[in-house]
Image (tube, rainbow, N blue to C red):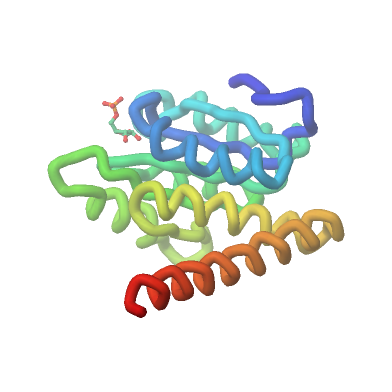
Length: 172
Ligand code: RP5
């Protein structure tokens, strides 16, 4: 486990394997954009169950506020982490098998009552939204972050308007 920056780590971006990194790095890019301290952690619910348990038990005490967990196949990582911590856990299903991520999606979202995981979409959209959801959670108690989040949403809407204008120019 390695801190990405000297900033205080508020978000753990966890993944089951390094093969998940191309997708999960999309979450990291969003966190960078918001200047949020995060760490990248590889641990597997199935291959390293003890490491996953230890990570989950220690995360809150280390100051982590939100955990984003991405995994493919029979993706139990987010659910197992959520069973060992009371921190909010956001699950990202990854398309890494012949089932194109449907296996991971169902494994991530179909949690039994009592152990919540916020399930995202499969793949990069899910990873990006996981980071944005973490930003929304952190923004509840961080005014500067709330302002940045507002600007992000305003820019997103402006970009849609620009696309419309571009389209209208092409048509006329
Ligand atoms: C899952 O199995 C990982 O999250 C990954 O998506 C998938 C395949 O892992 P590798 O065989 O590429 O290490 O546990």
